[in-house]
Amino acid sequence: MSNLTHQFPNGTYSSGSNATLANNPYLCTLETCDLSMSSFLYRPTVAGNALFAGIFVACIIGQLFLGIKHKTWGYMVAMILGLVLEVVGYVARVMIHNSPFDNNNFLMYLVCLTIAPALLTAAIYLCLGRIVHVYGEHLSYFKARTYTVIFCTCDLISLVLQALGGGIASSSNDLSGKNLGKNLMLAGLIFQVVSLVLFALCAGDFALRVMKNKSRWNVKYIDIVNSLLFKSFLVGLVVASVTIFARSVYRCAELAGGFNGSLFTSDEALFMVLEGAMIVIATTCLTVLHPAVAFQGAWHEANFQFRTKKGFVDGKHQRVNSDEESQSGIEMGQAAPFVRK
Image 1: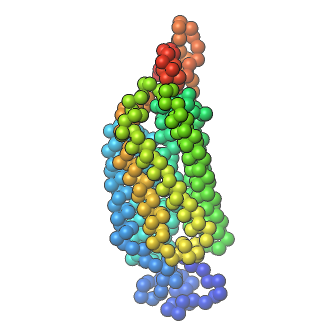
Image 2 (image 1 turned 180 degrees about the horizontal axis):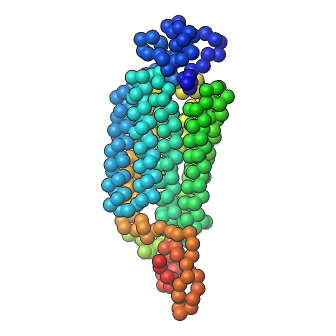
């Protein structure tokens, strides 16, 4: 397989390589070819990429500990899958430093670091519905579960597009196939950016409603939402969302220039800041300010189910909502009877 990014638009080759190596860049070594035959025009820094990989490993350990302790399975799985991909991607970049002409290392880096943040945003989306619940679903335009369903679906579409694009780009031996894969990855990234913007608008609207209606907050969780721990978690969630958004915009610009664009092949410093550092900040916030700790035991109470169930209310058999989110009677200081699962 030829190098994914190396092309010969004018039919000429690097002066340091013969025709055989030019047609088969994976046979190159640092002694026989220059970096114009590799995927990057630089050798990724070992220290910086190893540091990022180490931070992500530490976050995996933290997520496992807190996830198992508090049984936040959905959040934990999304975070760990994303973090594992980040580790693999940065290890691949370290390997590229030593073997810059190995296309497998490049593909490992490209696919893993492109799709990993989509899993991290899924973890963020799981939090909004529960935040709506503890403040009061009556303050929101939509039911708490609606936010989770809509945005996690958008995230899945983004993930599929990026993964499919990465698969096509890595398996194609012709330029048209590689461009198709690149365009699919770009479409997935753009979809992710749009989803994050919509998420920010919905979350911002709910935040404004919460601030304007303090007297209508859910009294059951008033101590939790007023705690410094919970407020810190909300700040961490905002920071994580903003940094992942910034990273996604950068990756859109990077991929828009193609695999041979200068932003993709030459500017490692910008990559380390707008890709690596942004995701390090996001995952650190999502780990150190873990939602299960911030919710102080209410994480599972704020969960929802998609179906209603039958129950007895005031001696009558009827369908009742199985969502533990439905607290409007509590928020208004009224004892609205309902059946809990």
